[in-house]
Image 1 (cartoon, rainbow, N blue to C red):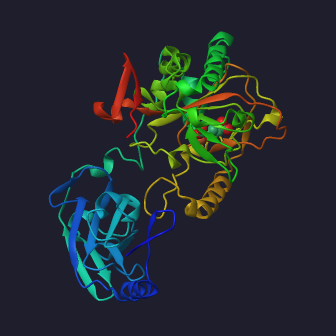
Image 2 (cartoon, rainbow, N blue to C red):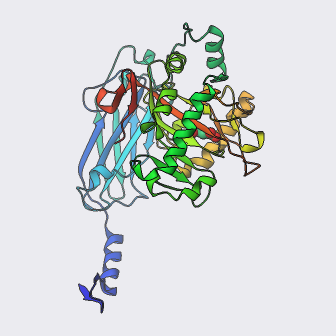
Image 3 (cartoon, rainbow, N blue to C red):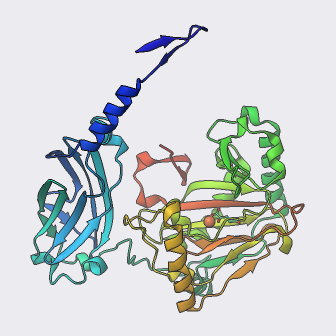
Length: 427
Ligand SMILES: O=C(O)CCC(=O)C(=O)O
Ligand SMILES: [Fe+2]
């Protein structure tokens, strides 16, 4: 029913009676049937040749299922592994609202199933149960003979070896401490060209595409991401992040995919470094300690790193970089749904986990007060962040680039904008 307002605009209305009827019928809706189900993986005859299993799929009920009683459990022998339920925006649009739930969980066959006698002989199935119904999906898995030796996210076999450019000592340092410092790697001129491109971006922001964005007022309740061209230049005088300027700045591309730097990073990442994103800061980030894999997990563990380039000398009061040498060897934290991304609700759990690990391994925090032109390369699993800014007047200009390994992606997923120089395309 529509009602006309004096100004001529029509607004939809819901009568009290309709609202009540809706609430009552929603409460009574109990599914009696699973009307559709789908497993992306594993499927019948699905071969497992890695020591982990991705269980991914969706379920559709004839009524909206009561979330409290709905359970999806992977069973193998005597083992029961509950899967967390999520929305599947891609599928649910095709079904009545709320009828669809998804699951997407990465399981480590070695640790999650360590109690199961011999997985090869176990019958595996997924049991879906809810108040008033149950459904069992048998899984026919085939295991590759040496799946336990295969490369996996949980135990990558990446071997680091020295090259003409990276010495044995540097490789050992990387392996043991998870970072490498390259003092004065870039010249004043190279760095000044980047600073000039950042100034240019702010001065001529109207000319920049919407893919270059600014996270303004970072670390405050007013943090917000906008296209650079829509950003008030006043935000430049407090901590902010300018994202992906490498797309428009030749000076940034020249530096972050510089030939010598590529030669250093290649043995550390185990392939060809490819840009995932770039961020430039004019002030300290004050970012809480984290693993970069929380925000952009690579497809293979260890096949990711970041370069941090000092665009000026860093004063101790300007919020320098902090990191925990050796923390890259800590077993990556897996959130309750089995993924490596960390959602805000997992933070308290993660904080407990990391505090215990750091203490067990006796890992201590270090601070890096860089000089202009220094490059600090960190392993994707190095625990790090930006320290508190003591003097708000002090800038701390830096450029961070995160890299994936090109060989882990198919050519349609990246753009080669110059021979051997690639970046990951955004969806
Ligand atoms: O520069 C900093 O303070 C930290 C930035 C950072 O952690 C990142 O961009 O991944
Ligand atoms: Fe980071």
